[in-house]
Length: 106
Image (cartoon, rainbow, N blue to C red):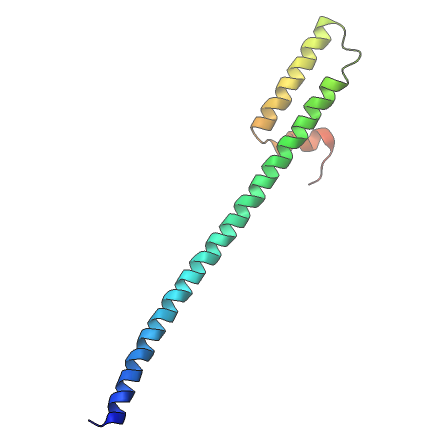
């Protein structure tokens, strides 16, 4: 076997190893891209949750701030019930009710 033939065989082995390493890197890259997309989706979901909760906190604040005219016990009981409902909707991240109540189209 000539020196050139040996070199060619060694180069083929190295090429095969490099191809294998390249394939493994491609697989790892795909996995990282998938994880990156998953993280982006999780962040978007968390942002939505925070936004919904913020809107309910605002509505609770607005009711507590501007409750003039609720002087009778019945009206105050309704006010408390409404505050409790908003708090519960916020806990559940219920975007349906917040959209209905403030006319949010998001």
